[in-house]
Length: 186
Length: 251
Image (cartoon, rainbow over all chains, first blue to last red; front, side):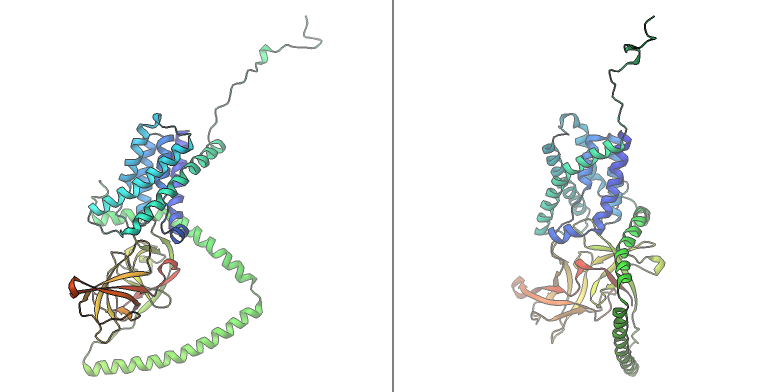
């Protein structure tokens, strides 16, 4: 179950990063591209284990940075900073409640770009930052908040359709059935 | 932290290795984009195609006439340069490239083009739109693709000259995070004599962009530091949000 979830999350992360580079709609209509990696990190932290969180942060961060002008590996740290606390405290989180998913998606979508920008600025990089960045941040937060419950629903379907489902025990036992017929009474 | 502290060479190799994972998806997307165009081409009636061929033939004849005139002017220009003892100007070589991806991060203005080291790409080659307007320069090269940093990104500073009587010079710095069509023009002298609507083109200083590439036109300007400094905003001619095909310039 866990391995299937991890593979599914990684596959979706890979495709979503690629989609962010070729579909320019959100950038044209809203002024900012919506990033699904933080939301996927929330899902991975709640439904997989520490290994899944680390794998998604490492591979997702590298994939994202390879198609971006970011220095390689800079997105890994913010993703880990979001994934670890959620993973450690996931027993206290009502993961099946949609409100919790929305709040976690919004927080993750706020923290990951903010921490990445902080790292870039502290590393003497010169990213494009201005008052418009606040609007982009809001778009990313709202986008993440909306996407979080949808991702949980889609992954739920995928798990149901493709994942291993344990066979439910029925109360039927053939040796306890009353036998009827001509040869049953001796 | 380990990856961030790797030397530049190792980082670029890692970037090349990781980004090559996406090549099959880029190929798929490219094929998917071509499919509707191919279907539309097959559905076009023969008469329409013949009309288009005739139009293109006429256009070609006009262009050939214009080109022969341009060749004569270039020859005359070369002769005059030789007489004055100036260095001969070499014509640019242009190669077409297709824009395949945009930067997923909101704080960079870069695109990926399908033109890599196998096609002769190198860092700092200028990039133009099909109309000949400045787009940016190549900032990183992979085997199949290259990363282009666009005008308006803080990492693409362009020395420009304003088409005014004094030929004021300045440097294009950065655009806003939301609007990539207007770029700040700084490092102008306080006595810069400019007006809105004046053309801005590359100055040829800086060693990356050849002289005379059209960039945009002045939108407005303001004086700073009690008249010691002037800052202007330039509306770019290139529509950077809708780039599909570009020219790679080999100066």
